[in-house]
Image 1 (tube, one colour):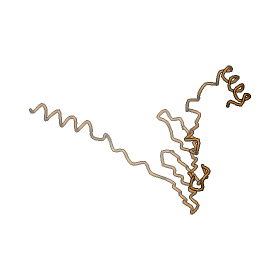
Image 2 (cartoon, one colour):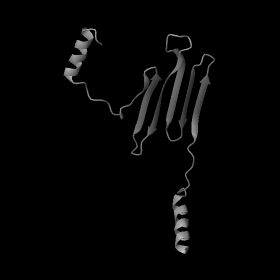
Image 3 (cartoon, helix red, strand yellow):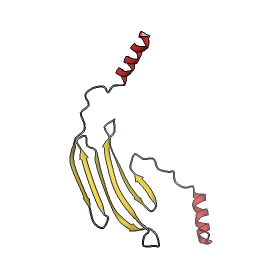
Image 4 (cartoon, helix red, strand yellow):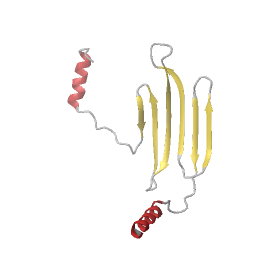
Length: 126
């Protein structure tokens, strides 16, 4: 029984946060919301993390009530190995698309597929 209690105390001690980690301060922050539904915000923290985003309303369908928000932005942070990584993104009627030098990209399309797609388009099937 004493062993179980000792192990329980050990488990609690190991699960407790280690060290005195100070919260990361925000060194700048801006935000704007407009009556037309457009908005923007940005912030930067003391560790170099930067975030910015802006968006506006857009007609995304044939009916007047088919309105959606188109947003774009970026964020950057320093990786554990000291490299600053930046992601630029857009979210619109085509979905969320992110780009960045460190993100994987698909391989180029094989030439025979490019030709087949061109042939289908020329035949009016695409």
